[in-house]
Length: 272
Ligand code: 4AZ
Image (cartoon, rainbow, N blue to C red; front, side, top):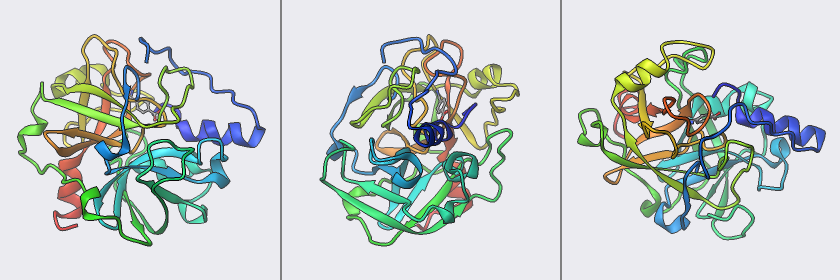
């Protein structure tokens, strides 16, 4: 998240133009970069965060992803709830909603559920990006079948080389081509050293293994990108990461950095 995607969209909405210049060119064709379309029924725990007031209606106000971790509880990235993304403190965004059960943002299926309560991790560090998570409480519950289990610390799904899938409506090229339909991309959990080397500390952030997870492809290609933030990284049927940050999208040597969900479990407790 060198530059919050959503602030770009906010500016675009305000100016009624779409000047979505790419901060860094993507390596490949196209999440999600290098991804493929998926039905929402395949990942019912993936939701879109929306504010038409802030981001306009052309993509139903989508600006970030989120994950259903309890019937009325959605996990997302803390940076998605920051004033530099929303242009205001989150509580002032009166039409903040979660769109559930809808893959095509412009369709009418699923539900738009207003948010009742917002909690942003007080330990989120906007400089390193550590602790990038927050919780939205919904005004109405979703079905139990929409809830995904969070992988606790020690879960084998965190091991390097584990195959994982990231989901989102974000930029598919690195050039500001935001998806209308939900997409997914296959990535691998990478050793912490890969992100430690890539991100020793810069304006982009600093990799910290305790609270972050490294995933992508060594050669570049498949990756999350702007607009996917807050969305799920899933392995072995369990939630292991939230899209958080990285340098560009899909670039060789610059893997995606995810919020490590075991750190979320540790902070929130398992009982949500
Ligand atoms: C972003 O700006 C962002 N390639 C999200 C994910 C990645 C890079 C940037 C990972 O929200």
